[in-house]
Image (cartoon, rainbow, N blue to C red; front, side, top):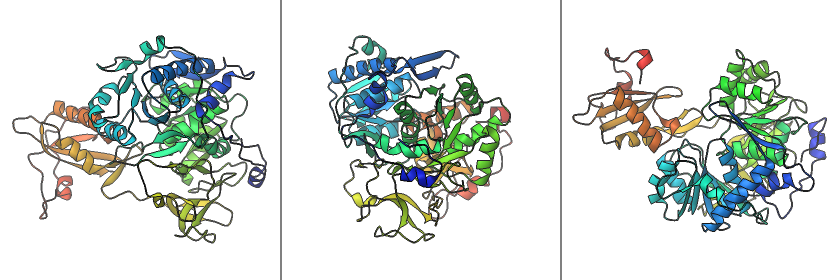
Length: 547
């Protein structure tokens, strides 16, 4: 959509939105790639499994498999507009499920596989999902969470399907591979995103089919006028999150570019090896994963990509320097929120790349600092960073929310949720976002300490618990075992597994210490300072056996 240009001004001047009134994401990124003379046997997805084997899937294969699943869901009673939860790691099943749901006009609700029963149950209940298509590891959690979702009637699980669930591949074998994608309006609902963290009961963010083409210009700009001949894309972002889906997987397939997927939970060194084996030339990685990749690339063989994109957080000067040193190309930011979509980006061939700034508004979009009435402020004045009305990549509404003023001002400008400034050259300078009280950041995700404490307290072998941050990015649990229960390594690991199942993998305390009781302050609350200053136990396990 974005034409190559020699300057930012030229890119803006020559840009025009081209979004048809009738538009379906799945037809665009899959079926269209096999029609009108296009070679449907081009590789769309390269999947490398944990045992080292490689599977290559063409656009034609994706079309037939997603047609089969669309028929399975339709036969089970899923109708256009129904919500369907999808939860897979990067895999063929993830792609087929997303495409099938969008083809039949239903609304896909992506949920990361790392989320446990509690956040999964909230997403099922709040979305009113009538169906779910999930991986084998999510299957048991889905069954446990079903009680909270009275509308859920169809459960499809890939491999090892629990009782009461349909096995995915068995169902696909008996289904027809002929299915006509529903002709949807560009304004019809397509995707319902919830935060990738497990905190609280967040509102869903509903996006229409138009959101994919609406997010393309910043993505294409940050990836060096993506695509270029020979491009193959890899992303560290989860396909079950907004950024991985809308800024990596779907934009690549819109342009017919192959995507590489590696095994779930790989180290940075293994990810670099996967990219090298499959000739990856375009990379999108959020800042945390990009830093890990860059550090690993300093000591390990790795590919030199043509283009490297990150975001939504802007990189600091040391982070920019590290990425450039490791990969030989600058890391360009894509910026925006889940509500606004991608609205800004930078590209060092078009503009100066400045640390802590994500660049300028993308062609076709206006972003500015505004006051409480939605009036743009003068350059350099701090205000709410907002997007002017008419940007097609923005969301439709918050799910089950009746107050549009939460995000839209009376003037129609959409708030991004951040405060900052725009300078005279058009560069955006968002302020760092403050964490809510009682929350910390773990593995790039927000974690509410009280919620982890509550989860531990629900375990039958725990009498009381407290969870504290002992250093940035690391939390520790202090646990009082129930009467007659021994506090040992076995129980510690059992509690960590319990938090993983109930809450999320990124909320698991790295360390668990058993204490006789928890000290309390005068107001009855747990005395955190006393817990953190407790002397180290002489019988603590060795470093190799630390729990």
